[in-house]
Length: 126
Image 1: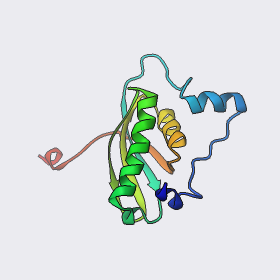
Image 2: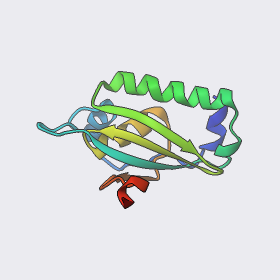
Image 3: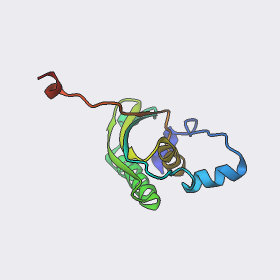
């Protein structure tokens, strides 16, 4: 796909044993009982992201959605913000490892993954 030209050196690198790598790639062994959905903000460094066309963004979205469908209801994409050289994505997932699996399966960088501790807005000030 055209957008991959922006990602050649940005792929997530994870060092796991060969046996654990297979489980990680399939999304197995990253779910623990009684885990609830948490909100995460993912920073993806993608040079030129703000210049991607609507068609390229559609392709990226389709890739993400197909990976999410394969992974099931334990991870959800809420929305993303595209800036000049970064994309900030908001996801709900049972744990951070699922975000990493999604990034690897979709060939997306996940340069930073942070669990949201609190949400504030102008309403918070009242």
